[in-house]
Length: 251
Picture (cartoon, rainbow, N blue to C red):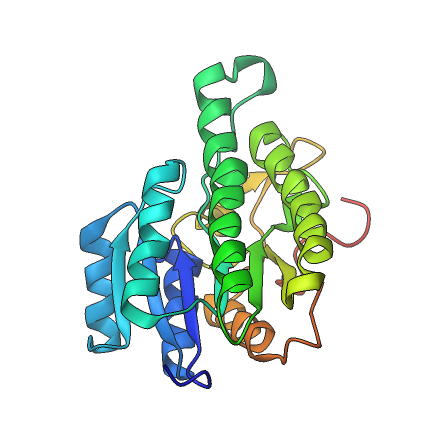
């Protein structure tokens, strides 16, 4: 395969940020592998892009090691390499008071947001280390919550803080194999998952207030920029947020 043709794997590609970034990478000339739990949603994204041999939809539950292994096996069988992983799949349990949080909900968030991200990064790392030309780029979706919590968000915030440590570890361990790893921390992109922010969410002082939102296409632009850098350069951490959201300053 021509090494100038880049192959990108996007998890959580059936909707929201993952969908927007997958379509943007495709428009930028990447071969794109769409991974997510809902096969129909992935097929709809592929159809929106126009279909064709440059797209591959692989239904994948990132919490299941065997399914992640199958994702990379299908990617390598179709395209021969992995140049970029946008490690995006995630869920939340926001809005649940800490004392009412169930073990099952805690575990579901940890399994998806942390263990799933580890499994997908490890699969990409192995492929990037073994391929020729060697190397590639892993972009982890952190969140503003990787630095500052919202009220009633312990599982999501804990996993996103952990993702920051995972990003740093992969970045360090990948140096010997020309594998770059960075993280994008996104604040209030307009998606179904974040739609409630525009109508009113709990603030640190207990008030309910609407928050400014960010067009998800700006996130897609940023991910394409991070992905397109040569491997001797890396955006280690990027914070992309609605300019007027209550993150900077005292809230």
